[in-house]
Image (cartoon, chains in turn red, blue):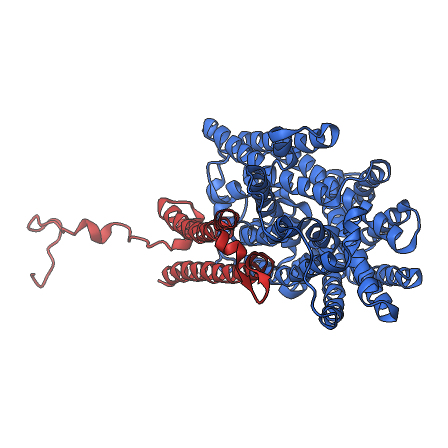
Length: 132
Length: 497
């Protein structure tokens, strides 16, 4: 570089710059904005949240179907279960009258834990991007 | 049974209900208070209110009566009524609260942007509500007659009047307090006598129920009809709970989606605790009150056991406590149903000529008059069966609307209308045919419990027609999904666009 910059009328030199330096700076948009504007990225985030919540719900449904749902068939097919007595009470009465209820509550509790965790992770993801 | 104690018990419950309602009146000021208790009800208060509202005559009196008469197979009813809340929790609770809508027609409008869907949903809410309200009024008449010997219409009219006064005066806020009080009253009323009854049974040498094996064993006959009926009851109760108008309305009183979930979880616990008790009454009834089966008065078993087993003043006082619980059951369920019906009708009436509160008050009177007239004029239909038809109707129409609306972007307004009309016709024709003609054989069985085939019809039509009308998916569906599913702590755009 010469100590005195040449004028336009000088040696005919032209100032050359990278197009990247003059282009408008790339704006990093937050996930929140992506969601608000329903862009492709926002949609991907939303779909992943909905899918994880739906998966938690369907897990509960499948568990129900495989436990409570098959009980009538078990009682119908397996005499050993129907004839069994616990403390003098027939096993089906214990299962249907008592045992089912705490199981339903536990299933609900597990679901709530899972759903809240999914929401917390989603919020953290979105807010972490927000801070940048 | 001692008439004086019974009348005192009924009067106390009625006065307490109106008293708590009046306390609520002092807090109810704005239209928002009236409709949704300003959305500031804590999960415990709200859960107790939901439990109080949900445990109707069918739960308090009906389950024990069914167990007394038919045994193990009847245990599916309370299981279904509880599991319905689990499915409501996983599919509907939080998104429904976040939708910001107050009734099912509101939800349909928010999600599908269609006045047509809203009208169909409104008509169905009224149908389900009347189907559920009528047996409550009839059951009240029956109880008052059993306890006091007064003619049946007295109890029916008294319950209807108390309910209307309560809704008209206080709206949702006072209903919330009343319902919460009534859950705990109902639980106490069943729980306390059980200890006395079991102690007496123990002194008696612990006799076992004398019953044929088809009472003790589930499906001992092993035929396909029994299996169909059991699975159909499951389908109706598991899926119908989320579509009952008085259940759905309560979710708007939660402050946010997370509270809606926690509330539902507590409700599961409250219902599970309550439903342990009616079975005991049914089994004790099989030991000490088998004559009720022959006289066809099995629904009275809960009310009659204390006088039969214990006798004396103890028996009379406990019987009065149970009467109070039964009366609380009629009052709370009817109040909740009337409130939700009034809300739906009131939204239709409110406009230039009526303020929101006047419309709600007018609609409350209107929504009680029709089922009251039906209850007074129609022949008594068994409480349990009428209630099951209401569940089947809700399961075939509102369950697909809510589940698909919340989880599937492809739902369209024509699809929703087709599903609700188709599923509603299937589940609605069944009780009419059953009551009018009592058809025999397989057809009669399918008609007596329609849910197992009418729910797939509702879902199938809704999905099929939505796929055929893909072009009319609402434009703002992505925005609606953001609103339904993002946690409130995130500051995203939730407006309608």
